Length: 98
Image (cartoon, rainbow, N blue to C red; front, side, top):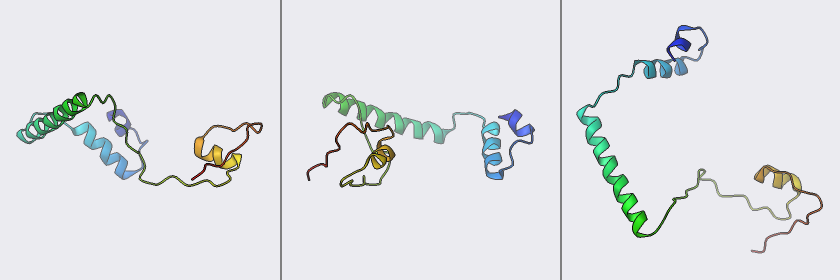
């Protein structure tokens, strides 16, 4: 990152300031950091214990807060847009029953 900062490649001032902050960062165990890390470790342990007790191996959560669109009588172009893979024209498209 320091080499990128020395070059004239970064024109965006916000990006340049982020790179500079990363280069200037000096790791250290401040009391504030140690307290926050202790809380984080406590929560992490509690979650792991709860997962083990409930025999849960994985947590799944949505990456978007947008509800999926309902496709009534979808055509192959709509399916490709949502799924990302081509649809064979030989396969019949069925409309889900609600």
